[in-house]
Amino acid sequence: MRFLAVTVDTECDKGPGWRVRHPLSFRGVYEGVGEVLQPLLERYGFRATYLLSPEVMEDPGSVSILKDVEREGAELGTHLHGEFIEPGRKLRPEITTEKATDYDPHTEWDKLKNLTDLFTDTFGHRPLSYRAGRFAASLRTLRFLERLGYRVDSSFTPFSVVSGVDHRRAPVVPYRPSGEDPYVPGDMGIWEVPITVLPKNRYLYGIVPRVPIRRLKNLINRTFGTVWLRPTVSGPGDVRWLVERAERVMGDPVVLVMMFHNVELVPGTSPYDHEKVLANLKFTLSYLNDRGYLPVTLSEVPGLFGY
Image 1 (cartoon, rainbow, N blue to C red):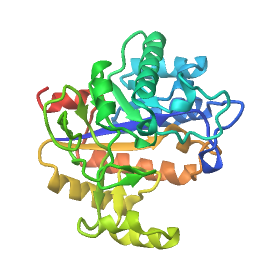
Image 2 (image 1 turned 90 degrees about the horizontal axis):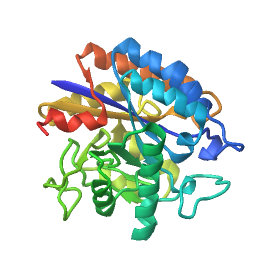
Image 3 (image 1 turned 45 degrees about the vertical axis):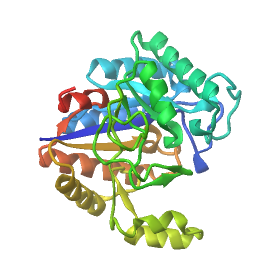
């Protein structure tokens, strides 16, 4: 069987260079989630997992919309941008570049616990799914999440190094990590449900992170790099290739994990062209619907494997 998990990193409005807009605004939730994404998902028969950054859970208007979409079948989880949560919360962050993998263990634990408590106080139940800001999760992160009662992490990006975070060894299929090595299947209580990423050439993709010149890196990436199930950067040709390739290598069930940000669907709230992102998203949802994909949320994925 074939399943699609639509995952949305849900944050306050941003601008060029992903800089935070001040005063904080939430058009990406009010319009992006409430007016654009939810009707689109309903049209194609899919459901989303919204992974919520702390500031979103402190905005009453956003919370009201998110409670509504949860009642309609969406899943709500958490998304750590440490600038917005104690300890060491920034009063007016300009950009969210902190990585939890750079925190000392006590700071990461405290931020994750405070994030989880904020979610529980806001929505009346504990979150089951998580994604790290900047994809910055480690074995330590998984152990902390397991202690906090999470069922699923979705921070790993196979074959990819993003913002210095190297998840190239991660499997492309959902799995229970080993307590010794997060990239090896094992018996931890938490599941890793990686974002769907595959290399165009598995033997040559590894040269891309080592190229120092950005323009040359972009050229090499188009030929030997990775394809993400992310409408922000992947158009119809890449999506067709990725889906057909994933169906050959994943076995049964096939679980695809799409990711993007809520703010990418609204003009002026991200660095991206919202019309292009929306067109790619519509194509991807339509294409996967035609191929018989069924909806699944992140915390439901382990159940597909009998857990």
